[in-house]
Image 1 (cartoon, one colour):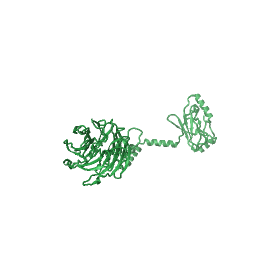
Image 2 (cartoon, one colour; image 1 turned 135 degrees about the vertical axis):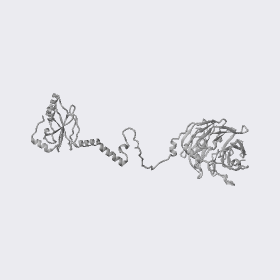
Image 3 (tube, helix red, strand yellow; image 1 turned 30 degrees about the vertical axis):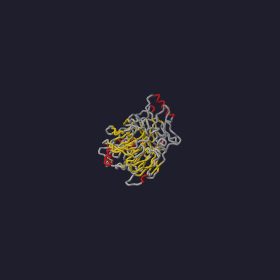
Image 4 (tube, helix red, strand yellow; image 1 turned 135 degrees about the horizontal axis):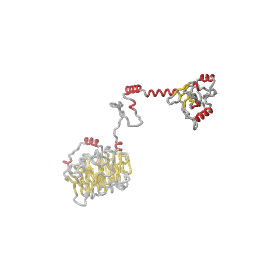
Length: 544
């Protein structure tokens, strides 16, 4: 039994209004176990003691609250707090604590004692129960009641639908698992698009694929492996002209047919250069016997032969009805193909063979490159002009090797690209208006040919010793887009197809390779084709 105290002690206990709680931990059924519990309780003073006081409280005055599991919770509320201890008490069923009921007092302490910590019981002792107060129990009971209240949940849902147009529980962004929820049926997003970005060339480049193997390979037997000659050209009608020794062959890229257009009479003569007119109907052919032949390709008929040079004609370029030709003598001749006296002007600036000749897209300037390492820019020939047209507008001598590779930029008519031979190996970009060199890069190989690819604003260079490859450069940054190693000998020339989507390369290994490196999006290509209008001239009736 619990030790009884005087009524004064009970009154003092009641006046202090301390708060504690006694809970039945476990019943003891064995008599020896009960004896051990009694000894333990006596050792622990069997009471709860007030902090800094020897007064004790009488547990007999505590109220009991029976539980469903058979345990009893005793509670008394007071203003002061007592330290936790162990005691036994008379249970409601009349049995004494000595017969097996075991209680633990739990006191809530608002001001914990400094420097004094409570430790859990040692092995064999009672389990530790965390502190609980009435406020926490009341809040928990309220939350449980609120959770199980269907009316409150439905009212909250109705309010959410009225305010937001949808239930917030159905529109959660983050979920613990499962697939994301779909938008409610009929839901419309009222957010406005503030910014959008169309596809840029940079983003197109990321998904672009350039094949490192050619699409087609054509045999070119008896092709002369001569750096200074220009043996291939692609017409606007998609016909490729190739000079093989003393003959010229035509390959129709649409049908795949090959025909022999012409062949020189003497076996020792050979074809040095070929060039199509802008319309693709006529072909100019320069030969080793110092002559230039004009051919009507559709009718496979030679229209005329023009003789004015004293050495082989290694380069040709058209500008409307003016045909410019460069020879090994270093002279450049302008021919007006409409008149019987075709020779109009002679340009004298080069001291050695003129191996590169190109008119600008707008027809304002003629660029020439020679074996004397010079790059010259000449003005357009005008009607009734005098000797002023015989002087170059620009003349650059920065290259240290023969300049055969020349290319005008289609989207910047005042930009000219030039490439040097084995002893130079540099690609230079010139501004014709200012006369300055914009950029220069060492290609580490002989530069034999250059061409701008407008579809992706790139520059293609063909190389001889030592790499014998074709390089696609991003312009104007000169970062390498692709390197193509299809030929086993030096690449002599590179030309673009009329739609600028493919290129043809000819090399000393007697092969012509077709590369589909610049194919455009089909939708964009169709729109561009509608914008291009066919151009016709009266050149056919003027050639004599």
